[in-house]
Picture 1 (tube, each protein chain N blue to C red):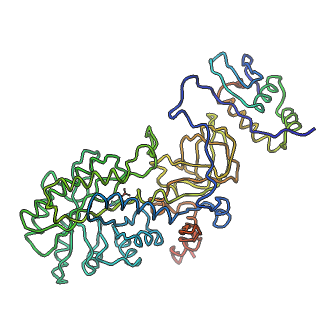
Picture 2: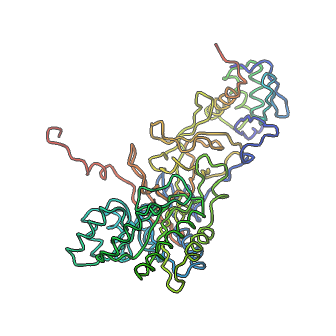
Picture 3: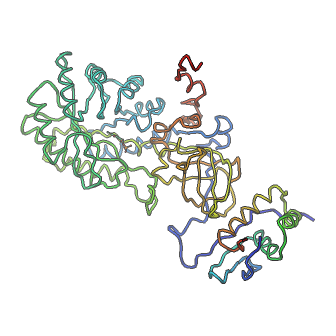
Length: 448
Length: 82
Ligand SMILES: Cc1ncc(COP(=O)(O)O)c(C=O)c1O
């Protein structure tokens, strides 16, 4: 007698008339390929876990963003936010597309120079710039965004020594109706600190005030906050025009656009709620265009968009280690990707897909990383099919911050590959080796 | 392992727990296992029956079986052993 095909036994509670949040998805479609590359093939060649970045997606997303702003405002310039993903290959794709660089440390500054960015096209942000960093930035004509008065005096002292007139902007923080307000960076608009800083620079004449900068926060869902911020910077620029007869060259509205990831605890998925580039662009350009600024002499609009430009272009491939039941009876799946690689799982409910077609039956599952630490949770509760040990899965939208904030903790960091515009994979960061780690260590003589 | 006595398992794939008022849907493999459990069969006996009937070996079945028991326990359909 022929045996019957076996399906995993399951039992599922029936909820009469009580659909869960989204009428609980009854199926998870597998994600088997990333731009024609089989997930299993990629893992076979490059190991698991594996970060995969799509050059096509980066370029397409960038073009969409640029288009959304360019049709609404005459002069637009993007500056790639290095901290969001500073793998050189990624940065160079953005630079090829026309992006400048936005950096917040001497390390990032040197990386931008190494990627061939002209000094005058590097925006230097952040509260921690050493005198050494500032000297280099002044010599290279970079755009230094001043965060506090101490920094302004350091730059003044440097300019006296070098005889150069540093190009600076001030970072302005302000109330845009979102809380918490990021008032720890820059000079406050409402209490007059920003004007105070502007006046000191304009009167002193040793610095060239070329721009006004703000970065109101990250994953900002409110487009109106950008309109308020752009309006306030435009007002400052107009005030400078009136008082000193000087046209500010640019308004830099920072980054902060939400990506399509879903924030933890959000009721609706990010794909439904995230404003489009067009909506952000509409808010920001109208904030400037509706100001008193002379329309024949408008400042360039600079954008330091990070996560919204790169999140979609990154995937993390991984492998199931084991399944178990917790004491509560809940299913837990342990995988080889933990919070060491997925820093963003602290704030996002990442979408995760099996890499091959599997049973239709979903069960609420906790996905744990491999770290032997209680905090190592990828997803607290996800409706997920049962994957077996050795099965692969794909985490979507991981391009932003994970490849910079990852930790070398307990395990080594894996390969990162870039799929070029033809879909061909290239390793752009080799997986770490024991030697990479131990060569930094020094044993005192009595322990050798 | 004992399924609670008053639990009703229908042949059409439904389970009803009169104590809680909850109903459940199961597939045919789950239904067969529940019936065998209700008949007081041991894990070993159930495994033999199922492996004879289906395209699966004992090691493979065991994993799914205990996962399934875990679900039954989670839904409190199994007597707690004291
Ligand atoms: C000054 C500045 N610009 C740009 C960014 C990029 O932000 P996002 O990734 O939210 O677009 C950041 C991120 O914190 C930032 O601090």
